[in-house]
Length: 356
Image (tube, helix red, strand yellow):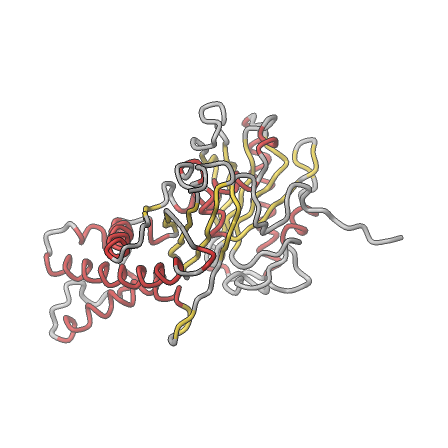
């Protein structure tokens, strides 16, 4: 008897370049210079390195306003408070770091915009953990000013949703619109190098048919970096999280769609395997013997009365997709996510503004 092949989705391929609302022109571009990957120059770690450099001369003279605390350990909330605080020297240090980081981000963005895949980009939304701060918003605004001074016709703005929510809400745009006709919510997963987040995403289509009012219900969070699990243990934990959400959603009376949208780092192949870029995940997720969507559909074959469909895409793509309802006044737009690295994706709207 031939081995039965498990189908993880009958909707669209994983990592697809054609989605219901947009074409994904490019994602996960890895540009290099003599120092290595360009994205590393505009990561959250790069900002901390810049901050540390500005503190170094002050530390030598014994006048470092931050004391002995290493720059990596100063929270974004604390840095935001310093920006508007009474300690002018400390504020000046943070402003200097923001300016230098904006210069680096502008350099990287300039290089990305000059690629063929990003030609004629009109707007860039910026997400990732660094965006969720006042200093991040300042760096984004300053980057836009730098690029406009160089005659780049580009808008740059922070992603609207909290980045933790954007990575889940964007999963709605992996599913075709017909799936929402009889359902009011889906399951979404956002897998990162440090954390895993799951949630029930309410479509709220009755309030806004374009999904602009979508929100997260009962999100669950697991910081796997603290536990250092094996790949198998991580998948089992994820399955338990999803099963728990299904049970809670049923009790609450949600009409949960038989669909799971997954955001995951790396280059996602059409069969759900990961070609590269998953090195920060627990265990070897790039193995030819491992397929996350298949593992999940084996454990959760049905949701309600229907077979489970799963679609997985790059995490930067999915975070960007959360902005689809707000991008209908442009044709071509992109997303940058400032985190451990610099994620990126470029989109062309399929049903938005007419081509110029």
